[in-house]
Every structure is written in C-alpha cells, then in structure tokens.
Length: 261
Image (cartoon, rainbow, N blue to C red; front, side, top):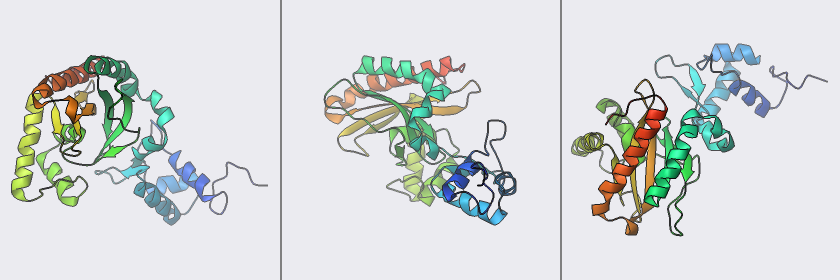
C-alpha cells in the first residue's frame, strides 16, 4: 500500500495533488515557480503547470506581475471563512466594526483587494430588521462600488484604466471621457476621505467606504458601511462617510499605521 502522503505522479487523487501544490507555499516562501513546485510535489513540470492553471482560474493561486511566479490567491478566502480569524487586520478590525455598526445602526464590513476585485472578509450586520448584508467571500468588481473605488483610488491612473478597459472591473462608460470622469471621482474620494455609492450599483442600497493602511503606509483593506437607501438621505451621507473614515483610521492606528487624513 502506498503512503497516503505520496503525491508523486501516478499516485494519489487529483484533489490530493492540487492540495499538495497549495501546501508548497509558505510565509517564508510565498512566491514559487512552476519548476520549484513540480520538484516539491514530485511531478512533471507540464502536469504542475496544468494544475496551477486550474487553480489560477479559480483564483486559488495568482501570478506575481513582476516575477511571473505563483502565490496563493484571495480566492482561498471565499472557501475558508472560519480560518479568517487568523488574519491580523480582520482580528483588529472586528471590534471597531462592532462600534461602527452600533454608532450608525447600519451594517459594517471589512474588504480586501484581490488585484481586481474587493473581497468581503468580515461583517457586523445592522440590528435593524431591514438591512443590507453580504456573505463572507463575496467579491465586488463594479467600479461604482464604494469599496472598489477606495482600492482603485490607491492605484496609478494607468492601472485603473487597464483594469476597466480589460473588463476586469466594470464601468458603464469606458471611453476616454468616461475614464477621465472616473479618475476625477476617485481623486475626490481620496480628498474627501471616503467613497460613495448612492444607489448606483443597486437602486435600493447606499454604501460608503474608507481605506485602511498598514504600518508601512500601504493600503491593505477597506471599511464599508452599507444601508438601505430609504434610510439615508443625501444630506446624511457626510455623517455616514465621516463615521466610516474614522473607523478606518482607528483600524489603521491599531495596525501601527498613520491615517492618511
């Protein structure tokens, strides 16, 4: 009987081999090439390449743009919700999200950026019977989403145009005037300290979001407040946005960073 840990080619199921590939990545070695992975798992390079292509299509791995080597992808978060407690920013943010929901009466959430979409990793639902909530692991790739706006606002204009033009991030108007207008909108969100989605992606929903930075000053997450539109007038948006920005700044400070505003 072969050893159950043997993942060499011809032994073990495709699932166990794929798991072995994912286990090649570690904190010390987050980036690996196809040849390295094939050697560690004990398979031909072409077979490893096929498995990685499948994992990449499911966003369980992704390629580093500079080195073209592989690393784990945020798609894993969508299937590993119970393990998110080990994520530092999530653990730090949770009590602040609870305070934010208590203060505003609306649902608050924490999102990470996958490179082309915002991924929900934590949420504190509104105590109201009518509310907006989302499942952990839900992904947003609509340019008008408040959380997507704050992430895109941290990127170079050229990169934003590339994401929109390729369709990775959807925007209603992708011609030059539309892209120029969207760039202005992102700049305004940065100056304001939070982004707004007032019924633009869903006519019944309002969302405001602000950026969380780590100790290096890098944007690493977004705090979002979402609410039914009937409960938030345009005149109330500023107060909701300010509360969201303040919560994001609190998370930033607890991570050892300095809030941008």
